[in-house]
Length: 551
Image (cartoon, rainbow, N blue to C red; front, side, top):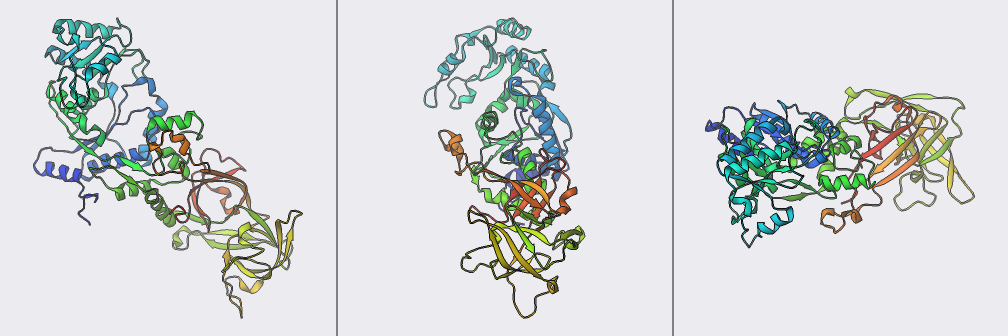
């Protein structure tokens, strides 16, 4: 195995963990995946899930799932359940299910400790004034007039904040650190704010809620987390993480380690922007197959194996980079090439009448469900006098090197007979609507004698095929980095969804289970939609084309 930084076994985080264990710094590795339940998980979260659960599993350790539920305005049980489902779907099981709200009483107590040590104060500055007092990257901030409040007054005000005596935004609890720090995060950051919002777990018990930076490090410490893995945007927050833990009475002090977040071309992974796409109706919901959410990818037909493989391939680094969409698409192609059953579907049907085939006869032809995997068995494909082929598998005026059907030419129907076209029927507009052909009855599973037929096309029986709606999903955006646009919605790909309502699929799919994945031969990989497919209405979502059509 390679020993590069990207190698799953040797990336810098795993090296740190291995070293810590060798030096007996920890007896057991304990990590956590700490999402905020304010939206659905996306492909970027998958990287963090695989890393946190993976590092724990590789070292016989534990990984908790912890919901960072300190901002109840934007959180809901719907998102909690969706996140739990996604983590399980990816193949991981948490050691313990935790919530930051489990620790609200502890967090309050530690805030009181900071006040008693003279390291926190209640501030009455408005949000606008706080921004003004904070200074800039080149100018130090200035201290709030309330910074000199006595410990007794701060304790009294903070207690009354909790009791609900003050209006939302009237007071704020801030850490007393250094308003001249070169790290703006250390310029007396907020620890608690007043917010009267019903919490999905604690109801109306609290009207003050702790800030993320204050909550996260203490939650890690309470749970005994050894390695707190987070993305690079939290690197400048690490001094605050350490400062809080250094100044409260708690035994555990986890090590925060940052890694590069996942940036995938032709997508966005901002929950705020993803929510905007949903609210404004640009997509059908969080699970729209064009969305980079795990729910969307699952509905599109992506597999947990492919997503875990993708996360392994892109590796773990210290520098942000943009990953080509083709990497993710290749992962699902490779997985489905090995695991997806084969079937035939005709998206743009053209009727073919085989005139010398017996009227009313149906042959039950056997076809392999997977040409390289006999264990997947066989299926029955009915063959009849009338079949459908793709419109573009016939050419009235063939281009050079065309190997499909033409008038007077021959082609093999996949797994069946060689047919020859001798009559083309067109409508009043000149469109080809039907072909009259003959078949060579000696060519079932055999080459025709005395001639070579190069073309092979797919087909379905006209009398046995099933009606289906086919949704051809493509990339949601038509530029590699839509987040860089002034209005990212202007970069939406107008052709990201094409709906085909008159497709035909072979009858063997009649009993397909929702979510089943197939390779429609010569067409692409598809998944039976889990939401809109009902009895007598088959809806198939395209997962990915057979090959990269964007390169």
